[in-house]
Length: 389
Ligand code: NAD
Ligand code: MG
Image (cartoon, rainbow, N blue to C red; front, side, top):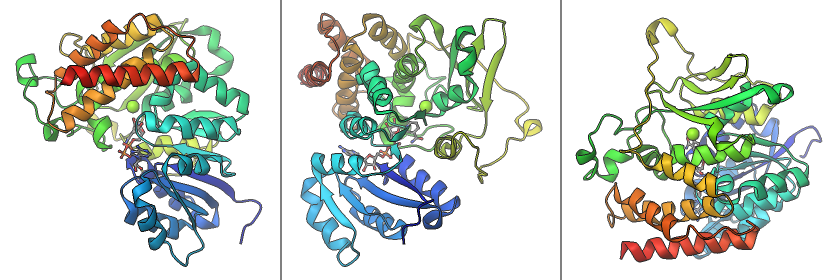
């Protein structure tokens, strides 16, 4: 029975890496005794989605794939759990009356549902960085106008959120994003040309979904994160630095005008950021591995190599141009990434395609209203697909 003190939560993308970790944290913090689940959404993994919906007693389960509606309906028959599918189903999930919504759909597919949740005033725990890369200020404004909080879950941004003192905002000089450097950190360029999806997805420190793992290998993940930080913390592009830190112990830092640098450290485990976003402004007790500094012994740092990893330069170009250029970069990147995963493009071709699309669509500025963003994203995808042949 619904008790008034239980918080209502929804998870958009509950069957992915972040979604599964989120339900793990929810279970650890009391599960159904402490929380009500308004809606869960997935895509192709119907068995897992139905299982999660039953276990957590969700009111609504949604598959993004309309062809799988019947299968989900059947899997949940007799449970009283409502079922929906497709884009309208995702919006329905986002509009359910949850106080807190985890945005963990991968890619721009997450934009419209997350916007819908933001507009009705839910607190948004944001894992989906593409919302900010593509829609930037429009997304931040939607959260502000809705009246909910925006709590970053991406580990770097969650770290910054933890150490960026709002009352000292005027004293912030720089944001330093740490990057592991990925599996190809020490590869010469020639060797990067022929790497496979299997080697690219093998992240040295973090266990994540397929696409973000490959984006980490190309450093497009860090490129997206620079743009994410720009919008989230309203800092100028020149104030955003990237440093390669192979151990992934420092999750990011904020530098202040008195020379102080504040950092958040921890084991590379997304449950810390997820738990922080769920309990904010409190800190929950979590069963993550504790850092053992004597065993760690050292932390290393090096400058990123923008010749082997041109993504970082492309992020700065997108920020300098502003408007819809984040959507152009991301749309081209998602198309090139899908082609690499499908074996239709080489690893280095991803950055080449994004650069070429940004070159050709550099004139697109746009007021960055939602229609401009959707159009720029579609145009970038069409052009990238054309270049892929
Ligand atoms: P994932 O691929 O493991 O899961 C993605 C989720 O989105 C799944 O639930 C899937 O069913 C759903 N989905 C896939 N395609 C969809 C579509 N077209 N429409 C609707 N739903 C769809 O991804 P992930 O690693 O959990 O990452 C999710 C988001 O969080 C991404 O934006 C990623 O960049 C970000 N993020 C992830 C991590 C991590 O540790 N995994 C860290 C930081 C940020
Ligand atoms: Mg990250």
